[in-house]
Length: 197
Image (cartoon, rainbow, N blue to C red; front, top):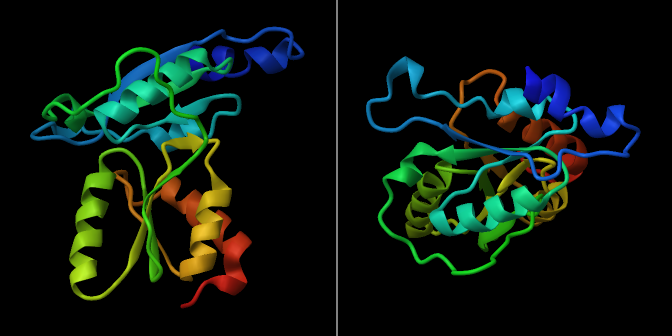
């Protein structure tokens, strides 16, 4: 409760005089191997409901370093969820030295024109394979990694959905109450006239 009631509200309660100065909480999340019911949770949606808290989820070791350093330097408290499968991933080239990626800025990993696919963390590997499979059937997928769930980059997603007219959201979470529902609701509101059904 210290994260939710104290850290996340500290700036607001102090009238914007004080912040948590780089408080970044790293936590493993998601399913991997034989984690079972105690080790396969995806609580990101819960923390997305906490005003004042940022939620960041990388998809690769390279992303993890850049987003982690940016999180530590952010004046707001950050929950940094690390997909467990990253711990078992083979070596990836990671820049040395000081290297940051901007928070709250999604990355368009793959350009496409027929449908927009959105995900974060471990789901990006699944979505990349889906894009490859779809391309064999002549379907051009635009793939977006949100990177930061709160605050998320609505503008990048809206621009993509406006172009493709279709949206698929994939996330590793329970079927009810997941953060994907928030994205779907926001994009339906922002792009209602531009989405084909």
